[in-house]
Structures are given as structure tokens and as C-alpha cells.
Image (cartoon, rainbow, N blue to C red; front, side, top):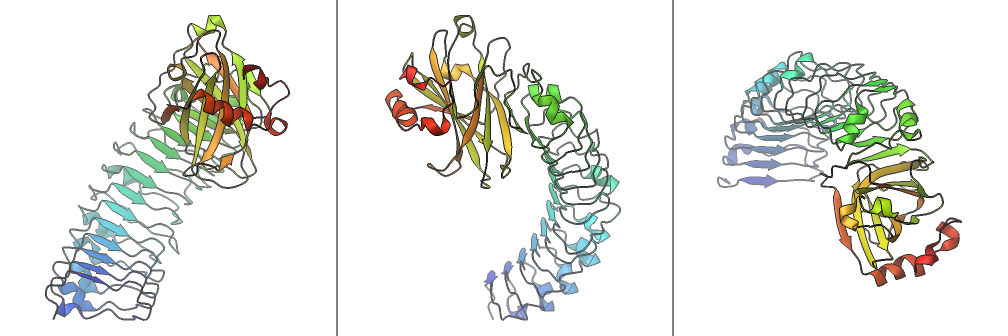
Amino acid sequence: MLDKLKILNLSHSHDLTRSPDFSKLPNLEKLILKGCKRLCNVHESIGDLKSLALVNLEGCEMLNDLPRSFYKLKTIEILVLKGCSRFQILSEDLGEMASLRTLLADETAILKVPSSIVRLEKLEYLSLCNLRWSLKLPPLLMGMHALRELDLSGCNLKEIPSDIRNLSSLEEVNLDRNGFHSLPSFSGLSKLQALSLDFCINLVEITDDLPPNLGYLSMNICIALERMPNLPGRPEVVSLDGCPKLIEFRGLDSMLNTGMILGMRAHNRITKFLLKDSTLQGWTGCGYISLLGKHIPTWFNHVNNNGDRVCFQVPQEIGCNLKALAVCIGSRHYELNPFLRNYFFVVNHTKCTCIFASIIDFYTPVRFKDYLWMGHLPNVIFNLEGGDCVHVIVQIQVQDSETELIRVTKTGVRLVADKLISFESSLLFTGSIPYDEAIYKFYFNYDDDDSASDDDDSGDYI
């Protein structure tokens, strides 16, 4: 009799086939049976545990269901069924679990979500991703007013119930790898901040009434996507890698100018338009753009097509009003390094300073592909003036590594003095290193044969 026991953790008991009889554990609050691969039966006395708040059955591969008594519990807050690959049935009594806040049933064999789920008024996080079979959702979802995160990725869904717009507390929705051709209206989801639709290969276009607070929209590898609407509000990140049929993106110019980060590493009509001569010359956004391409646009007037640096002297007529540096870098990646940081070192040989700015690159590189990164750096950081002799040197560094660098193949800079750039981004990190250290770092260790272009006059400023 363990009447005071609150936590029972039998995780990774690989020979356990039946759970204990819980009648002797009346005050149990947490039951953890994670990784019990042969567990196939949970004792019905679990329904007598009136204080039980957490049940973790992750990785119980032989478990088919739970006793009906379990669904009568009013105290369960977290139920984890992730990786229970044979678990098929969620009882219709699920709706009686009044305290349930989190339900994780990823990688299970569940075929149907019981309609009673709408009675779970406290449910905040529901995840049913990567199911073995096609999932059938109830026709009505309204009722889960507290639901903040919904993950239905990899569920083979052919359509999304239209009343998803009534889940007014939703902040994040993941619908990756599903088979629907269109989306219902999301207009009622005023709190929605992130929507992911990656690998929805049948999706042709999306609704034009997305909520204004949407900050992150990912639609990578939507190979049938043709049209993007004018997104409301000020989206922070839009990712459209691998969308070759895209022919229209309404309002793109204005969104870029408000600071949006755009990833579109695919050959399509929009990419060609953005790389067209002078298309982005009027761009004033503080975000950045990542595109598939080999050639730096011609409106960058200081260009090195064979290395990580450019040098120039700031003209007097520009230096008195210099607002920003527009920078374009080209690179090719041979390894998949998902977390990168771009460093921009501005070595001012006239003032003997070296100031740098760094920006985290959200986009995982595409292996064996050439792509371009473009962004703005505010001159208030570097304080360049007319007559200054300057080197801009770019490094792409693997996050959490001080030595692992990605080779920069091309570098372009344009001095921006004729338009105001609004810098509100929190992505920018700045600092400085001593000038003597910069000279040693970037010049004495510099391999001219490998990286320098024919017209690079690095030595003139040393």
C-alpha cells in the first residue's frame, strides 16, 4: 500500500506487458510508462485515480487502447500517446476529460477524432501528426475555445473543416504534408501567428482573408501553388522554397518594404522578377531575401564575383547622406547546416576601425544549389563618411561553431543614400574588433589565389 506515492515512472521497462493494479496507489498524480515497448494492457483501476494529472505512454508500441474507465477521469491535464503505433481508438468518452489541456497522439494508428472532443473547453495543445492512416476529423470543431496549437501534419487530410475559423484562440497551426486542394477561411483566427503548409503538393492557392496578426507563413514544396494573396498586416517571415509554378504574389513590394523576410529558392516567375535588373533597387525593408540564383543583380555597383569581399572608397556626395549598405552574397552549400549566421565586417582603413554586424539566417541551405542572400545594414552602425577607404568582408558561420565556415562565392554592395531604410529588426547583432586584429584576420591569412577576384585591390589599403 503506497498511499502517499505521487509519481510512478517505469519508463523503458521493455518486458512490462501489463501495468500495475493502481488500486493501491490512490494519490498518484503522474504515471510515466514511456518506452515500454511490450505494454499492451493498462489496468482498469486507473479510472480510480482521482488525482492523476499526467499520463505519458510515449513509445508503447503494442498498446491498442485505454480502458473506458480512464476517460471518466476529470483530473487528467496531459495525455501523451506519441509513438503508440498500434493505438487506434480514442473513445467517444474523451469529451468527459474536463481538465485535459494537452493531447499528443503523433505517430499512432488513430483513424477518427471523436466528435466529443469539442467539449474539451480547456484543451490548449492538440497534436495528431504523422498518423499511419488517413484521419477523419469531426465536421464541427467549434467548442475548443482554449485551443492555441494545432498540429495535423502528415494526416492525409483531403479537406479542412470550414469551422476551423471558430477556434478563435489558435496561435499556431501546422498542416504540412496533407492532400487538400484549398483552405477554408481563416478570417476568424485573429490570434493566429504561425501557419505551416509545407509539402501540401495539391494546394493551388490559399485564402485571401488570412488574419492580420499572421507573422510566419511557410509553404515550402507546394509544387502546385500558383497564386499568393496580398497578405494582411506585416508578416515577418514568408517561406516559399520549391514552388516552381508560382506566377502571382500580390502586394509583394509593399510587404518587402515593411521588413518581411522572404525565402523563395525556386525557379519561378516571381524569382525571375525579383532578380531582374533594378527590380529591388527601390527596396527599403529591414528584412532579408533568400533566392535561388547565381548572379548578383546589376544594381549592386561594388561586386566581387569570385570571393567574400569588396573594396571601395565612399564618394563625397554619397558619404554626407549615407543611410545604409545594401548587401548581396552568393554561396553554395555542400552540407546541410540548418543554423547559420551571416557576418558582415566593415573594415575602415581611413579611420582604422573594424565594425561588424551579424544576422541569423532562418533558411536551411539547399545542398549543391547556388543561392543569393540580400539585405540592408544601417550606416549608423559603421559611420562611413565621404572619402573613407573601406573593405566589406562577409563570412557565413555555422551556429555554435567558431571555426566552421561556409564559403562565400560572390559579394555585392550598394551604398544607399537616396531612400530611408526603416530598421526595426531585432535580428541584427553588432560589435567591433581591433583594427590590428582585423588586418591579421582578413589579410595575412587571406588566400588570394582561392578567393580574390582579379580586380580586388586588397593590398592597397593595408
